[in-house]
Length: 119
Image (cartoon, rainbow, N blue to C red; front, side):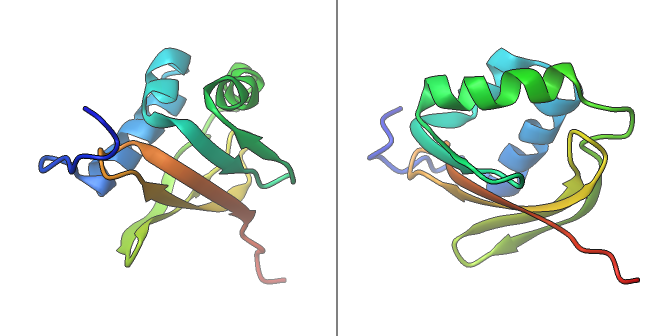
C-alpha cells in the first residue's frame, strides 16, 4: 500500500509490539519491513540514520549484540502524533522511543533517548 493512502487497519500500538517482537526474535528483515523506505532513526547514542539501508546498518549490530532481557516493555502508550515506548534497549539500559508513522502505517521516525534513573 502506498504511504500516501490511509491504511484503515493500521494499529500504531500493534506496530510497536510487532517492532519489539522482531527485535526480541532478532528478525532483521521483519524489523526493516516495519519502517518506511525513507524512515529516520535518531538513536540514543547520538547519530541519525535515514533510509532503508541506513536503518538496516543501524539495526544489524544492535540485534547481533542484544543482551538477555533486552526489548522488554516498561510502558507503552499512544501520543497525539504516534506512540511512546519505555523499554529495555538492546544493551539492557532503560530507553524511551517515540514513534511516528506514515499514512500507510509504516514507521516514519523514531527518536530514542535514555531514561535517567533517580539516584
